[in-house]
Image (cartoon, rainbow, N blue to C red; front, top):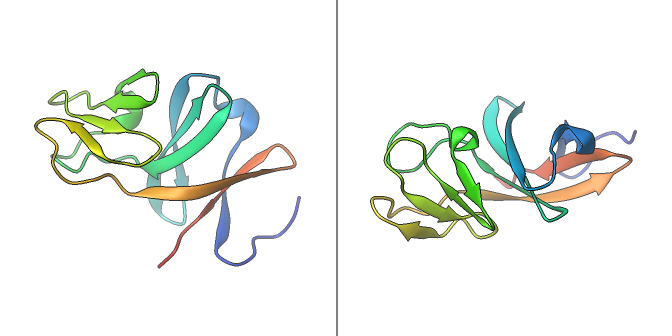
Length: 108
């Protein structure tokens, strides 16, 4: 396994995230939602932008996640709000796969 470089941090093992599923993972003190959508990986903040709720506990349908608290919907790849009551976009992060591990990049 390579050491983190240029802001990349480990977030999960590939095998931890089943296809068409989402898990909560923690990296650098942040709670993150880690998605596997048809074999493509995405990472967003785990907290809904409307009110505090864990998106990893939400309903994943194709490439959208529905918040378990008030049923707001986000487009996972872009973080774009898709259905009320959410209006603020969800923060998304770059992801890479290396040696069976998922890495996330935090651009500060």
